[in-house]
Length: 212
Length: 212
DNA sequence: GCCATTCCTTGACAGTCGTCAAGTTTTTCT
DNA sequence: AGAAAAACTTGACGACTGTCAAGGAATGGC
Image (cartoon, rainbow over all chains, first blue to last red; front, top):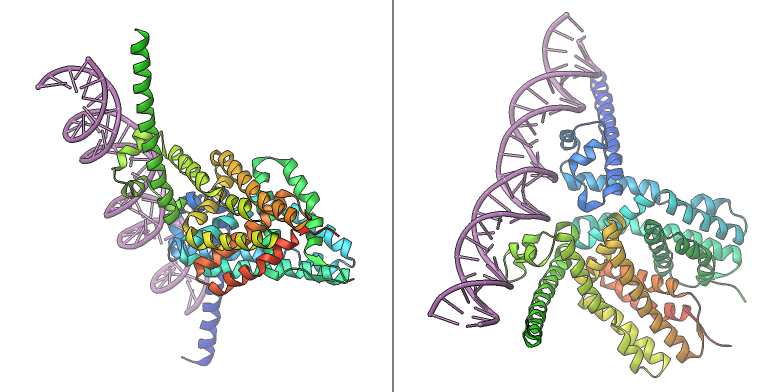
């Protein structure tokens, strides 16, 4: 085979790979939405296919098995959900502004992406039973922790202080509040959600120690 | 019917009800252990029956359907898990002792009852997808919050201070730490668990404000 | 326009699920 | 001891699951 022909074949192969990956991603997104709607326990391949424009058989053309598909869906989740507050951190110039915009976005995504968030907690819990999810879950959880830490440490910086807890503790505190708010959001208990919102600024202040 | 005969029948009926309830509870406990081992998504009635000394058909003799059975199992969980720290609160005479014993029991039950705890989080998440679990979950979550509040407010009292956050925030903070410790416990990451343990006293102190 | 490859659909498979009815065993009461 | 009631087992049902093979439809290179 000449080199020209070889390069040409490479180009074709690459294009095919791109198309393949694009469809994989498309199906993973459909999977993500189905999971967010039904939860892990009740999501079947046929249901996923119905949320796409293809039939159920195609899933085995693009994915080895169900686990492979769901793993890919989880990775799609990560792409969406792990840089959410970065712009707030980048553009805020005062501590007060950063805190206010963080709180706003916190409860905005709570209302906006509630099904997706319940899915995340569902999958994180699945990883307590199913070892094969654990590595991905731990990685995403780490990224979420980093994301929260970027907010809080920047807040402390703007305030002229330092964080009062380690990154892990800081993360679980805010994540715990989010989980609780999510539960009451789905319960329809708007009052409790509003109360959590009004408390959140004070909790953030608890997480940083102002300079003397 | 004479009054004597009537009372006798009552006694019989009561005994039958007691037996019925006893077996219901027995089966609910078997259900609880199966759920703790497999998780909600993979627990079937036949598997539950195999963890008891009966056949699968008996479950429909004592329970209306699967939901009824699982609901009863969740109530069994509550009986076990909602008064865990009360003795620590009752017997501790100094703040330091209370904090130390709380931390010890916190990580003791983490290692001891880990499967049961992951089940709790699993079911709490299910309630985000399945409305019929929500009422029970909210009730248990409330009791857990009360339990934590009894500890922290007593700690503040012994310290001569006051809690620095509301009960809900206090609960989610400690619960978040527990969830994270559980995840790393199942991952086999003992180092992270140990670190969370060493941090916990400081977090508790963060949750109370000492008097000036 | 033809061919080969890729893409997708269809239908079937073996297995599992919750549920329930029929029948057997055990217990209880007189 | 014998009858009645309760407790439990067995086996079956329709529905649903993940998986996969066979074949049709679309696509792209020549």
